Amino acid sequence: MRIAGTSSVHDWQAESPFIGGFLDVGPDFPLNSGQEVKAGPVPAHLEVFVTTRSLKSLEKDGKPYSDAMDDVIYRSLKADEYRKITYRLLEMSFKQTTNFNDTRQYLFETRGELAIAGVTNKITMPVSVHPIKPAKVKIYGSTSVKMTKFHIEPPVAALARGFIKTGDDVDITFVWTLDRAAASMSQSQNRSGKPQFHFESESMIPAGSINFINTDLRQVLQVYASLAEAKIEMDDTIKSLPALIRFANEEPVTKTDAIQLLDNVLLDQAGIQVTHPKTNRVVMQLRQ
Image (cartoon, rainbow, N blue to C red; front, side):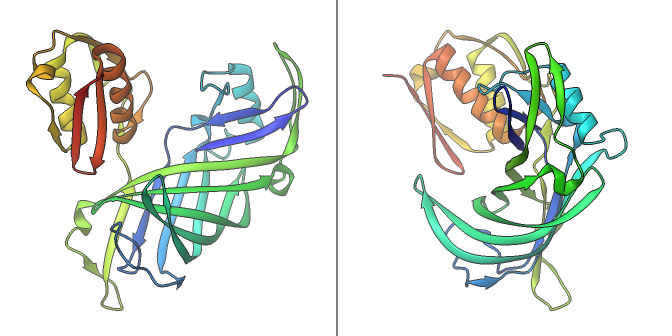
């Protein structure tokens, strides 16, 4: 999740790498990319949280900004007293499907309760749902809020880079990947007798769990295959490349993010271009 705003010096942004929570839905929710969904209300139970101190200030290029700015954010959000930012869905209504980058997405309008620094407000927010696999969905959303609506005075701070006064308006954007819980694979029944599906936040890979230090490419590809849970297609030339790979995840990452990072590493360090033509298929080719 990313929050972004303005200041008297420059725009600012902060990001958390992890969104926690769950989603319970019935068969009317898009679980597959080809599924037809009727316009109108769709039953769903969703609760989300982000730990306040997981937010870190960033430069526009994604590099860390400053610990001082982090402290300003934590004080403004009363992080010691309110350790989480939470959201609870009240209702969602399906509007239409769209194709973005040749990917079918389902557009919803939602209404829910957002709690920041101990103050709860009702908000509306458009969201897009992208079924990745039968057991995985990705949800995109964005909204704008005013700090003062949550009784937060836009902070003023003296940092090493100058005296900063922030604006009241804040943009919130997120990309949330959820896995269907194993217990829901059997499609448990709700009170109406309809199947119920339970999704939870995609599991995180702890910092330092992936640690390649001049590691042989074949070993790296074995780890990649395990993460991707997909069939990997490559020719014998790649299998015999004498490449050594260097990479470590210094921050916690989701499986999806880890795969994207490894895609970039394989291209930069071994000249291997990775594509994902289908959710359960990976193709690796030498860069031309």
